[in-house]
Figure 1 (cartoon, helix red, strand yellow):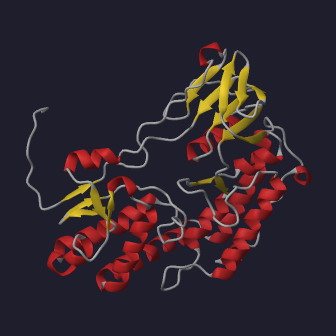
Figure 2: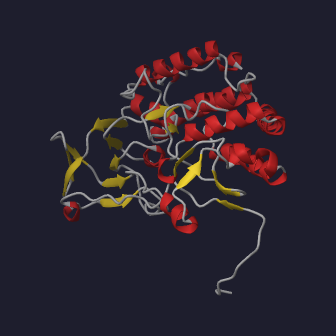
Length: 363
């Protein structure tokens, strides 16, 4: 029935999105003159594109841009140029995998020595492939507000001269290509907009009448706002890794403990014992810090966290242990050269070297 109704309940968890709202549309002067395809890089807007032999410009350098790079190159694009105001951080698959399988200490930190080895290999890969490193390196791993995208295609595409980047913006479109803010003209057949999303935090405010939330994600007693927030620096340096689902699992268990032991935990969950921030100003590190405080101060919540990490680690080691992942990833690495070369094999000595043979030893 479409009729409105009231449901009585013990508590409410709002899982209504925040960071990824409506995509920002690409709007460039002269767009109507362009003889090729212009589309946003979301949903199925590019499902009917024949990428073979096409010259592609992708605007933006976040996760959706990197996924559209993969789609274009793996489906036969002749060349891809990515244009962004700054260079996003791109992580090879192995680095992301290691964040989930390496052991955690009692403070949920990885071993510093192997972290340094990983970063050095990552940096060497950037240099060998010809990719431009993020402007924020080495002071920060990623730019404020950016995510870290995961892609092996990014590095191999650069090495094979199929992929390149430009710093700047699109100034205008003409019939046969785009003019960049630098004045450079880039011939292209397809222009893909991946310039981010509007935040949806206003939905929480409109539904609840509240403008602040606790860093523990609580809006009020037994009322939680469980939604992805702005990805600030250091966001992935926790046992959540790069997974919003892992964040959701942990705070779902916190919520259950709050339902069972509200009188005991209330001050730390929704009371004055935890800080408040504006709903539109939420950041990952705020609820990471709140989670660690809860782990340190409550044995049951600490047990949930430890069990979550142990089960996840056991699953990875059972289904794809480090040596197995290495072998699969190295084979994919080699096969990607052939795929990006139109199905024609590339001799191994002409391929981008694989940089992570020692990875199982870091686990």
